[in-house]
Image 1: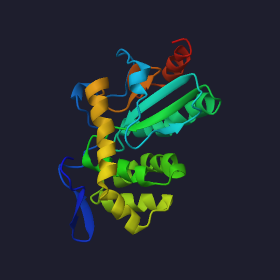
Image 2: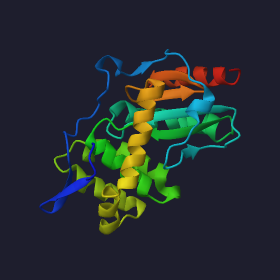
Image 3: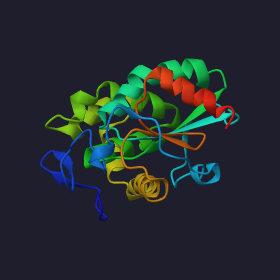
Image 4: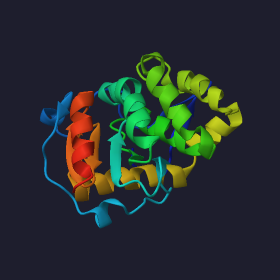
Length: 223
């Protein structure tokens, strides 16, 4: 996105400065896909440095396995993970104290940046329910002809008023925080597509089948 302005008024709505609202994009076109398990590892002390906006975490801080997810709110593979895979992982690993999930933003387009900002402006207890709703309803707002207005309707489910929604999209600190996380992930951790996961430091690119996630998480207990 770049620049100090977050959105500009255009008629009755708000529109992001910059490019279009593409969906399943990647910084490296060859890296986008359903799942690629390999890719090296990163030291935990580097990975666990929180961004300016703090962390969004599911699960116990004492869990022996930490899963860090970098996701774009307009990424179809990210939506599939949250809709089809995460509920089973949550039941089996997160709710039982075996693993925790840290969700981090890696927006691949301006509409994804907008959605990440709105999620960050939500009440803390509403963050994960809101991004879950965004992923569930992704096709109805992310790729519509009026993504700002359609996302605002989704945000109403988390209690946003029109004024709060507009103020969020013009909040430079939130924009800067989202961009900080993305830029650091790209620069220091070689994140170039979404979703990208780190399971106790091991990089996993893409939305793996559930059985492969289980295998990676179980391997994390001995890493």
